[in-house]
Length: 100
Image 1 (cartoon, rainbow, N blue to C red):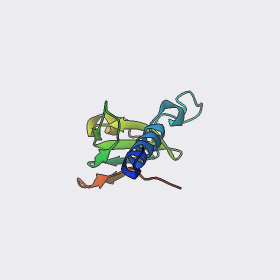
Image 2 (image 1 turned 90 degrees about the vertical axis):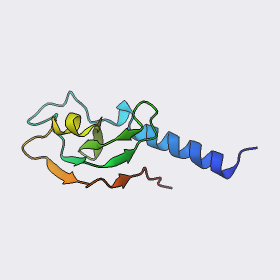
Image 3 (image 1 turned 120 degrees about the vertical axis):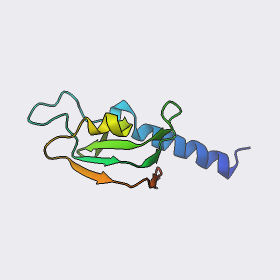
Image 4 (image 1 turned 30 degrees about the vertical axis):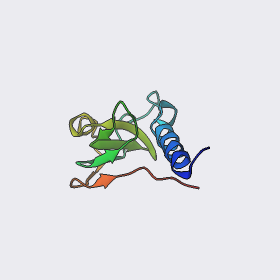
């Protein structure tokens, strides 16, 4: 019998893992100016990714509303472009959200 806790745990893991899947990443082969630089970087945070290979990232890069990269502050800050907005989370925790 599936309990509510088991169901919600599995559903949240699936939803968040899909959020960071390569299919949802910005297209690295786009043409044009500044294609690989994110629009937004959130850094100096504590991201709960629910990804066993990277369970606690400290920064994310977002382009066109999609996650471009998830990793450490140094990895993500290397992607900064001239128009990138940078937000310092000051160590705050970021959790995945579920939308019904």
